[in-house]
Structure formats: C-alpha cells, structure tokens
Amino acid sequence: MAKKVLKFGGTSVGSIKRILHAAKIIKKEHDNGNKLIVVVSAMAGTTNNLIEHSKGISKKFNKRELDVLLTSGEQVTSALIAGALNDLGVKSKSWLNWQIPIITEGEHSNARIIHMNIKNINDYISSGGIAVVPGFQGVSKSGDITSIGRGGSDATAVAIAKIFQTDSCEIYTDVDGVYSSDPNKIPLAKKIDKISYEEMLELSSLGAKVMQSSAVQSAMMGDIPIQVKSTFTEREGTEIINQDNIDYTKAVTGVAYSKDDAKITLLGVEDKPGVAADVFEPLSRNQINVDMVIQNISTDGKKTDITFTTKRQDSKNAISLIETNKKIKYEKMYMNDKVSKISIVGAGMVATPGITFKMFRSLADANINLLAISTSEIKISVIIDEKFTIDAVKKLHKTFKLD
Ligand code: ASP
Ligand code: MG
Image (cartoon, rainbow, N blue to C red; front, top):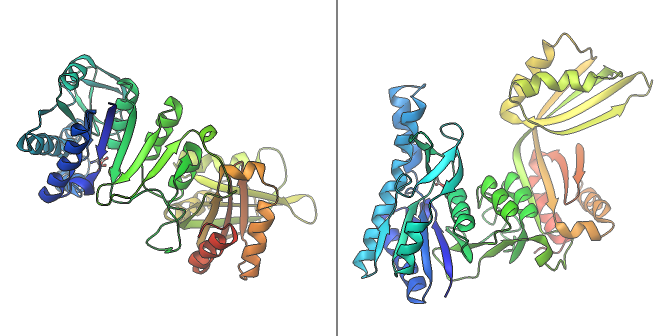
C-alpha cells in the first residue's frame, strides 16, 4: 500500500467522457489499496477562455479578481472528479485551496506554495477516502485567492508530494512520456524511460513541454521522483529522477530544438572593459532575455565582434535599444531571424569524450552551417539556418543512436 499523488492535466479531464475515464483510473489505484490525493487541472482550454473573458472587460483587469476567475476552472474539475468517484461507489471529497488551506506567498498570478495543512486530508485518506485537490490554486496569508503560474497544477502536485511525504507523484497527461524529441514532428524520436531533473529542465526549456519547468525544479530540490504517464494508453511512462539513479549507456539523451530565435551581431565594437555590460544592461532592464553570447576579437585587436541570440519576438526591440544606446559604438549591426537552435542534451556527456566533435562533424556532413555554438556541462547548442531544423534533429538522432 502506498500513498500517492495522481495529477491529471487539462486534456485528461477535457470532457465529461474523459473525466469518467480518469475516475476509473483513480478507482483502480484505490482498489489496489493505495491512499490517494488527486490533483486536477482545469478542463483543456478553460483557463484560456477565462483570460479572454477578462480581456473583454479590460486589458488591465484587476489582478486579485483575475485569480478568483482563473482558479474557478480547477474548482469545476475537482467537483466533477469527486462526484464521478462517488458515482463509482468510492468515498471521495474535493478540498478547495482555502479549505485545506494551501498557503502561498508572492504576487497574484505568480504566487508560490509555502505551506499546507495536512491533518484533515491525511485523516480522510487514512479512513479510505480519496481527496481531490484543485491544482494551480492557493490562498495568501491575508486570505486572498491566488494562482501559481500557468501550468501550475504540476507544481501543486509536486508540493503535495513533498509536504504530505507521499511515496510517489504521478503526472497523467496526453502523451505517454518524455521523448528524445517532439514525436509529432520527428517520428523516429524514442520514449525515454528515465531522465534526470537537469536533463528534463534543459529539454523543457528547449521545447519538450511535458511538465511545467518550475515544478521540475522544485521536484529536483526536494528530490521527489516523478512518473509521467499517459491517461489514454497503458504503456510505461517516463521517470524523472535523480541523476545518481540513472545508468547512462548513451552520452546523449535527447535533441531539442526551438524555432523562434533570432541572432544579432555587432561588428567592430570597441574592445574595452564594460562594453558587453553596456550592450546587455538595457536589454535586461527591458526584460529581453539573451540566450547565447559569443565575443571574438577582430583582426586589428582593438575591436571586437559580439553575437548574441534572443527570442524572435524580442529582436526588433533589442535592435532599437542598441541603436539608441549612446554608451556603445559599433561599425555595423546584423540581424538574422530565420534561425533555429538545436541542442543535444545528456548527463552521459560528462563522461564521454568527443561528443562536441561528433555533433559538429555530423552536421557538417549534412552540409549544415553552424552560426553560433554554446556548451554547458550537459548540453551543446548550435544555431543554424531555420530551414535545416528537422534534418538536423533527425541526423543527430542517428548519430547519437537515439532512433
Ligand atoms: N489551468 C491552469 C493553466 O491552464 C493550470 C494548469 O493547467 O496546470 O495554466
Ligand atoms: Mg499542464
């Protein structure tokens, strides 16, 4: 008998039929003798619709009321799941954020869970009941309803696993696990059985949107193992766990890509202390995230070239900030927004020599030019021409035997 958190995402509770299906999965876990806390998202699309409603009233809709509005979606699914379980003859009850309570800190729309009262729910599940808890919701110390960021039901599940010290945290979703790349676009991508938190964070920040990144981050900090499972198939899912518990037979675990990058190059920038800071400070003040940065000395040694990448949507703004920046002098500026970033990610890289070379050679063989390169301990990223994206990802799958 185990104490478990089962979390169901928006598509898993996206219709009444699906809610009935999820209830059957939960009942089966209960029949196997497990003590269950179920966390639910809102029905798929609901939160977006509610946001549209608020925009219909005002673009500056009151933040406190926005949280009251948005968290209502999770209240609906909590009641429907608990009601469906009752209908299947199982004792179950929903507990809203303020009833538990789930105490949060921080601003509206982006609060953090800091505390939960565990006694009542623990008593209830020990007496054979299934507790159903809405994800995404919290309540501030002063009693206002809060929400914990888009996709926040994952974070609720992880926080419950930690605070209630459950034996497992199972994330039921519409895919059957984490893949070495997006399986819809790259059919030869393979499901990963075990992945470390660090690798998962790299892959999700790079586009493998299976779980909310900040939830993975808190799971990593609390060393809470996560199982990603499909609501719709019986196939084994993916475990997200501590790197020490993984036997790396392959250097590379996954290949991620993003197609919304832009590359900006400043040629002939004065080479003196503080120049890079002068270039990037205004960008950061304007919330423009700079991803890769490459600086090289130009031939005369007195000047330098700086290349960096940003999100495509920020590139125009970045350029105008540089053009109006009186602190820096440069000869020319180029921008290319038809680029994509390809990254190989793998904790096994640390112990395997020659991975960088292998990646570059493999792309060169496919006649793909590298426009920028950056490396970290478990990731190597390159910027390439956007039109080669899928080819490059496929090629790297073959090179690193992920197919
Ligand atoms: N319903 C919320 C959202 O759409 C939270 C979640 O689904 O995890 O962001
Ligand atoms: Mg989600």
